Amino acid sequence: MAEVVVTGFGVRTAFGKGADAVRRGVFGGLPSFAPTTRFDTGPYRTSFAATTGGDKPDALRDVLGECADEAVGMAGLAARDDTAVLVGTAGDFAALTRFRRGEAGVEVADTVPARQADLLAARLGATGQRLAFTNACVASATAIIHACHQIASGRLASAVCAGAYLVEEENFAKFDSGRALSRGGVVRPFSADRDGLLLGDGAATVVLESATAAERRGARPLAAVVGWGAGSDAHHIARPHPEGAGLAAAAKRALRRAGDPDGLRVDYVNAHGTATKHNDPAETRGLRSVFGARADRVPVSSTKGTTGHLLEAAGVVEFVITLLALADGVLPPTANLTAPDPECDLDLVPNRSRQADVRRALSVNAAFGGANTALVLERR
Image (cartoon, rainbow, N blue to C red; front, side, top):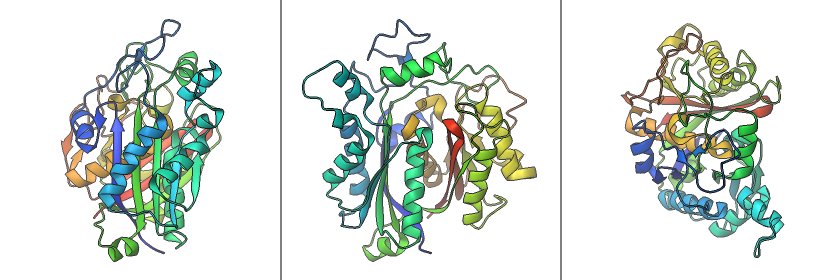
């Protein structure tokens, strides 16, 4: 089986474009939430989101393209016939809203998920696989897993994996109606006083290659993806399994593939950590199932207290955050952790980043319907 390496990335959050913006905001523990002006929030329980500003979001295809240009440029990759483009997206909801209103210049094709993969591949000149993954908050992580399978088995030499979400009214209204949004405008993952998530703008692209292909063209690996796994418990349409069964299954599969079934070599976990009533204790129990007696000694943090929940983009953006933790030897904090919760009794890196020798890290994500993913990154 071929080794899978990361050779480039591009990222954008509400803090701005690029890795330095992530370092400043996410690793600095700085929340990025403010009242949004993109739509009328009067009918809703809150007005807060983590956006890049402006009354209208940029076009989803442009944000994906900017991140892909950065990633491909960093990797020094010239797209080939066998370069796949895999995107986690639910489509362009802002374009859908404009189409419903009958605005000129918007076609229904602009709104569908597959269109984003097609447009990105055309921009890069890649003529390999073009796939869109739509399984909610694990969509872009699933794109990475698919690429890892294909590269490890020799079916692909390289893949561009991406995901993007920009805050818009349709999903805002849905999460608000489900009482999932924080009314106070503060996201407190794993804290006893948590009262919900907030949505955020986010996009990222990573270039994955076989180690052999990267070496052949003289590219420097930033990290290796040594394990990946998925698990579905199908417990409930929205609530996670109370013991975190699907998340634990995904993580155990990823760790077995990484040759570390007990997680003894994991130095850090980037958690899903939505700051909702049911997710955080379920995730805690799932991670305790994974690490056993060692769970108290494995640092875990959720970065959604700074970025917000990025929906389909969460997996790939948090993959990049984990990659930076490996590269910089710094653990991002769990922001706004103000009140310990006995049901979330892990080492949660509260409020401030922490210096650490991070050689191997686990990034996990979960989605409605019981879908879960796990990725193991190793420093190179």
